[in-house]
Image (cartoon, rainbow over all chains, first blue to last red; front, side, top):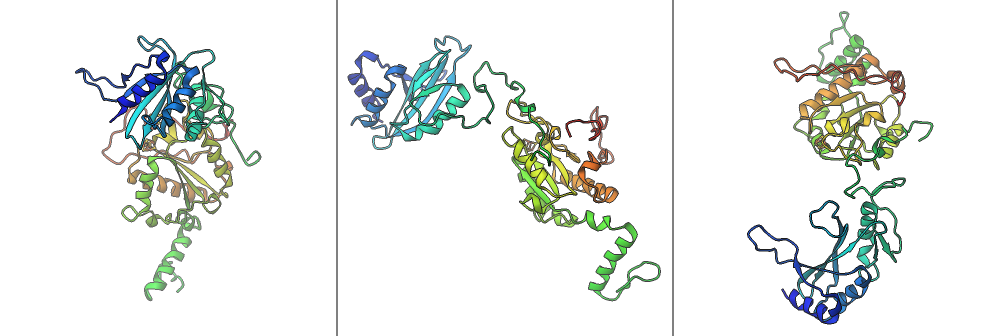
Length: 177
Length: 206
Ligand code: SF4
């Protein structure tokens, strides 16, 4: 459980970023889950990620998950989207979460596919459902929604029942099959 | 072998008696009696309803009693599509293609709340009722429908076969406008049986 070491290493290497660890979950009685996240600016993400993977004290070899949160209408939220990187070090046995905040109208985050190859599909998923563009991604296409959908359905301002996509099919019959 | 004068089977041994029984039933009820006991279901199982359908096909509820135990996973070898589960936008073209690949005559059961109406999944991705896109003969209520309901639905298809024989689905339209009666003593909620399902002639989509 040496994630404090990893954070110290990150702070030493990037003092200008002011990386302050915060707990992911805080319970009502004041305790927290012991899982920490740090905020990283989008333009420094690649440096921080590469350092986190390669540094002796960090060694985050694995990107467990890459997802996104839409903070629209969230109380006290300063930014619209938070892209969340869930890192795991198998050798050091610790975890750390990175969050990158981006905003409309052009939410762009550098792609970490060159650092963790497994980021390719999660980044496509975030692009598909939240419309966040990953600069440098080798193949940024939709992954879940069918072709022809223009919207990004997990954005909070997208109506739950959609914009008529589910009714807009042309029935297939023998002639058109 | 052979029927007696009165049409009753001759009792001359187990094997011949059974064959005589079949011949007798065909004699009395027509060839559709045989057809309705030879349905070939194709489970289009996309969600939890599919699991319930497996229970019906297995030994306890035993679809074989209705002659419908030969579930085929190729549409070209089957004539009864059982849509068991929710159908999402990406699946719908697949469903429609599979339906067109089945040979006539063919029937469709929309099993469960999800396939029939979208169920609780009133979201952008889930099709709110497959009957907007393929002709449905029998709807099964429930989430999931009880095995008894599924058997009742199969028997409703058998009634359609008995009445309609092998007319193609495009001539037949939506089923026979039959509403399954609740068992005696069971009270159904308001609105039950009020809505007619419409048919091909009045529905331009189908
Ligand atoms: S009707 Fe209920 S059991 Fe059937 S697919 Fe929908 S949620 Fe599952």
